[in-house]
Length: 127
Image (cartoon, rainbow, N blue to C red; front, side):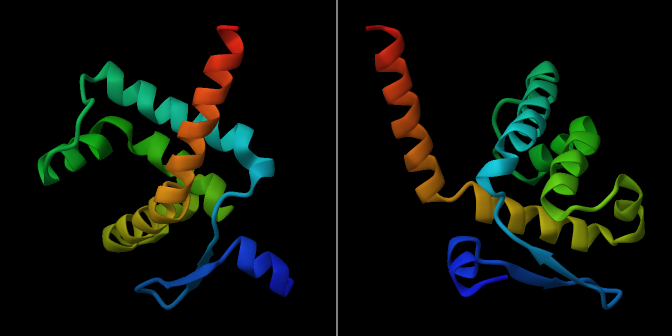
């Protein structure tokens, strides 16, 4: 990866309990379509189950109980791993990787840009 790309997409290394090192990078814009489909599928599954707010660890457990396949699908896109790979890692590693993926892709800068973009699109469509 070039130095310029490393600045744009700062990868982080995650060491699994088994010793494997996994590189986690923010989702590039070119994967937005497939990534947003996975996120939409996850949110739809959660809404279907009535889980619209996360208040405590119990709710997080419900997320995985209701939508574990959707979570792994989203993670698979980011990590470029097949579904079977997730059966080989520990629960702690799966949670750690998911946390890192969320931190990289749903940070304050992303939220700010998404809100601004939605506002602009909304103002264009109502003109």
